[in-house]
Amino acid sequence: MNHKNELSPEQREELLKLLKARFEKNMNRHAGIDWAKVQARLEANPAKLWSLDDMESTGGEPDVVDYDQKTDEYIFYDCSAESPKGRRSLCYDHAALESRKENKPANSAVEMAADMGIELLTEEQYRALQQLGTFDTKTSSWIQTPAEIRKLGGALFCDRRYNTVFVYHNGAESYYAARAFRGSLRV
Image (tube, rainbow, N blue to C red):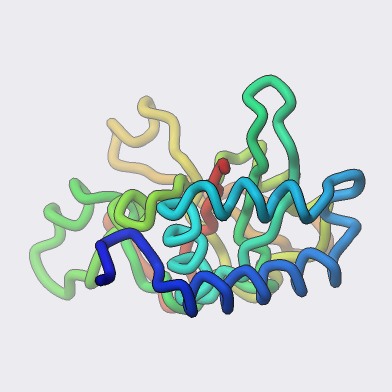
């Protein structure tokens, strides 16, 4: 029987195989981290595997990018070259979605991330990701927005143009075919 937030043994095996191959192909993202330890942690946390599967199925290509010694957690980010295809055309959050009178998008970035069990990257995390490769040269990604900005109706997003990471603002209710969000997951 398949519970919500839990993968079948076959799905688990397939996902772990895919994550291991990506891990081995991109060693620059996680120098000094041992895949066997990451895999053991993932196998002990079925709900986290489910979240990673959601990240994968929406085009995020999740990979290990860090290990937090204080919390003893491995950190995954979406590492797809462009913003994840299965998460585009979303406004920022539920309040923004509700404020639209017409042409509402299917969902919001914050709600979708919560449903997936992940968090939007912060500006600092987004900039750290960009140190590991070149991301969002044709797309953009919503990031966590400070409450003061959100309270005034705005939301932040980032992209990379001219070999530089830019942080911009938009009305939180806006959405674009080339904007999604990147997530992080701690395991």
